[in-house]
Image (cartoon, rainbow, N blue to C red; front, side, top):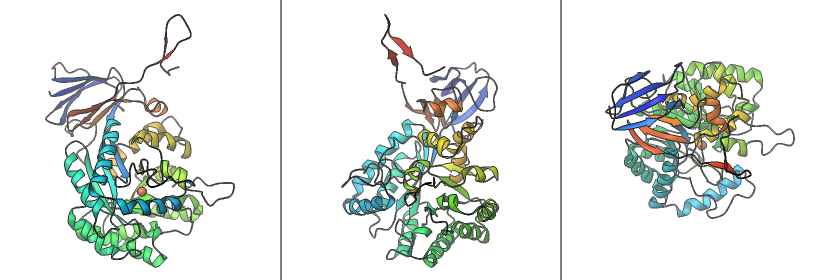
Amino acid sequence: MDLIVRRAAVAGIEEPVDIGIRDGRIVRIAPSIAETAATEVHAAGRLVTPSLVEPHIHLDAVLTVGQPRYNQTGSLFEGIEIWGERVRTLTHDDVRRRATQAIRWMLAHGVTHIRTHVDVCDPTLTAARALLEVRQAWRGVVDIQMVAFPQQGIYSFPDGESLMVRALDLGVDVVGGIPHYEWTREYGERDVKTALRLASEYGRLADLHCDETDDDQSRFLELVAAETIRLGLQGRVTASHTTAMHSYNNAYAYRLIRWIRNAGVHVVTNPLDNAVLQGRFDAYPIRRGFTRVKELLASGINVCIGHDSIMDPWYPLGVGDPIQACFVMVHYGHMSGYEEFQTLLDMVTTRAAASLGLTDYGLAEGRAAHLVVFDATTPMDVIRTIAPRLAVISHGRLVARTTPARSEVLLGAAPEVVTFQP
Ligand code: FE2
């Protein structure tokens, strides 16, 4: 064995197990493995899950907060204005440096697979070229999928469609879209049709920003579902954000959810960004503006959680930790039921992996060894304490670790350690 994780608490297995890894794969999961390994990780009864999968981030925009100025209102529209100013100074090295930094943060939090959108509304495709280099540099440690994302619209930006095609020809993996942001509803419909036609022609996956608005008349998701079925793309299409669903009438939402299920469309919700961006035009009561996560899950649709932004003009916070997004989801999505904590972890691991189309992934013998050891014993405690990632394993190799902080109260004769456990 190259690596053994000792006494791991694993979902669905009663007692702690040893996990043996050889040549990048999980080769044995057993109550006790007699062999030894060059590297041994002692989980000591703590929770071990498949590594985290980030299904939705914008690596070209990360770590730009305050450049050239801070968003004072916190609104989407001021964010877009500021990004418009920042984008003029975008360079290859600038994108590469910031993306690399953010990936390090994410890896330290257990993320080994990332799907990033990259703005292709740029005749020079500067960000796409830089991220292609980043993707190559990280291959085998953090595996990256890129989405050709038409930030300003396929039909509301000059030559938008040919820029999408050029990005795909350059090697960008996934086809994106942004129908609700196009100038007109007709443009929006063409946006969806073009994105899914390109996915079909190029044999690629698709992931569209779709209905990211509080406007209950924004109804492009039904077209995404219909075109997915018509083109036979079931299971290969993801709709991101879909926040307008929050505001649809219940009869329409019921019909739509059946369509999404029939089309096998994956849904990504982004609790961090959408908690601050939605509901900005409301007087009280102010809508939360989330997609209908619980209803979607209940009807058998694959829903996962994305981080979306790390320190950019739209969302100034973030340390690249998907568990923070889970923490917000508990509150905004009313997901505090005990079993729902496991569901939340699934939404940043196995469910996110399904959206990315990963097959060689998961905590099972024979699968590629991508694992994370949390400093907590249950899913609820992982999210409650935003538990440190004691060890991160990618392709069978220990690639990151964290030493937990130690808190002490200094009131008695000797320091008293605080564990944050009841
Ligand atoms: Fe996004």
